Length: 466
Image 1 (cartoon, rainbow, N blue to C red):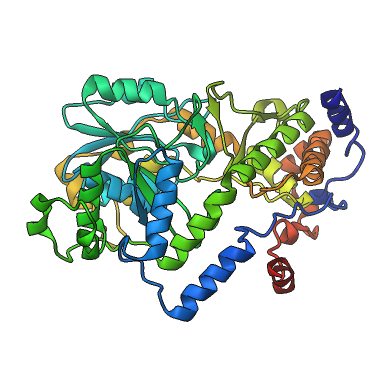
Image 2 (image 1 turned 90 degrees about the horizontal axis):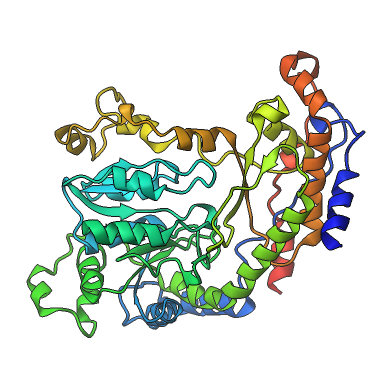
């Protein structure tokens, strides 16, 4: 009954109203909540650290670092956790701990934020791109296995937007070929595969905890591994040498202690924030899922938006809400549809401009910009990414619509507004087709896109902190 009622409510919206893109009145801004949200206790802890001047997070000798790593370790079933300055650094530390280095090949996805490839390049290793599943946008295990060579050392799957990769298949392939697995969980806090949290499958895995993520501090991250040796090797190469004073540091590594390191350590402030944020992560993930479920009911009869067909074994945590646009059925380009959504007040976008192998800074043969640290390594390996064919990634990028999803509390009214906007645009698809063929008459229309995402006012933030 609820599904029918929600569906009917949506169908009755926007059928006769002129699009804001064409001069009509917009539905109204979809306002994202203030995010990240910090509790009063978290703010008080940060103020105390600042007042005491204890901001450095050299090692577990710092109480906040020790507490955060212990809490995160419990969250991951007792695995070793090393806090870091970012998700990118956590991935690089995972590779360093696994001794992935000069000339090693690491298979990863062409559809991701650049950190999942940059961490490989920064280890002087070679990213090898395996295409994604056309329906999900996640790396395709069959494509992974087809890319394995004698130089392959690891697989780096990315749980995009909080949707889990098929880790059963990935781990089976890795075991069969003797490869390491590094999960990029930067967008996937709270995501599970067959009931197990992501980050608990691979040999060393990275999480981002920057302010926009489900577990958000300011700028932070952490590496998690079941292997103590990987943990200590990552400490040696990527953390302050104060880590060598921690109990259990291997004597075999002591001759190599120095400061020739990547400075990937966390601050005491962010460590304290992570401890506090972790306490409320489960209920906030539940709320995200509840909101998406509401949205799914409201959009059940959408003509032009398709939900990605993910496995029943996965339970996403929704860093972003992602859909595929049915351009052929709509008869308009995805970008035109996006423009109409934005004009109505929905700050939807396309997350990535192109597959990573097509990015100019990877093309050492033709690149004319500032020098990079990886071109010589790619030249020696005779890598030519210009020849990489990733048609499924290209399809997902050209048809994808994404929305940052920061709704960490139940927000049925906001979900209804999102559905109202989509319904209005879909109901006026004929007008949108005409606009696409002849946009000139609307060139001077004053759009309302400036309010598609409005940051909170300082006074609003002050009220929230009281």
